[in-house]
Length: 219
Image (cartoon, rainbow, N blue to C red; front, top):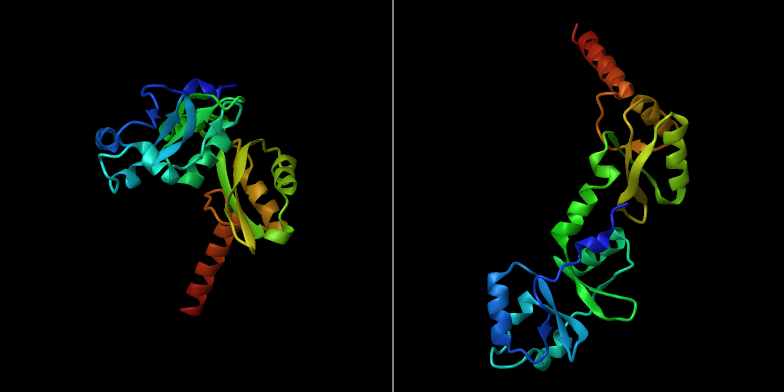
């Protein structure tokens, strides 16, 4: 299994709280980072945002604006999905990493975590994608898995790709095989099929009947 901590980098040292805003502005002018970590006396104290820095007095220090620092971070033991959630929740392309003692270790870049995702079986194994929707109160992840597996499919990954108070949308990747049987079983269990499939004989049959009816009515 790939170890996400292999993606921790230290290309740039974190800012010291006593650094001037002028130096921080110069850093962000050359980089595309949304944020960057800050330490004070070697202790992580938060992230300074590139969008905020442009409004600051360049003669002051970071500590003068400590109240604006954003305190998000990842732990070294966090799995990649949890790390990706930290990126998403904070609209950041960089996340500092702390160990279990709260010591600063380095940082993750969003592109590296996306690359990690691309190396998982969900992305690099051959298979078919099925997207289904069902009422939230009737949804069961175990039922989704059962439907796939009872039709001789093997799940390579699945996740909630959309959720509202009324319904959830589930994206499933399965090994190539009897996608049509899986799709029809989902329908029998009242799942709406969101994705389009050439293997979906039910839709093709409806289309053929509709075409036939149109021809009949036009006679």
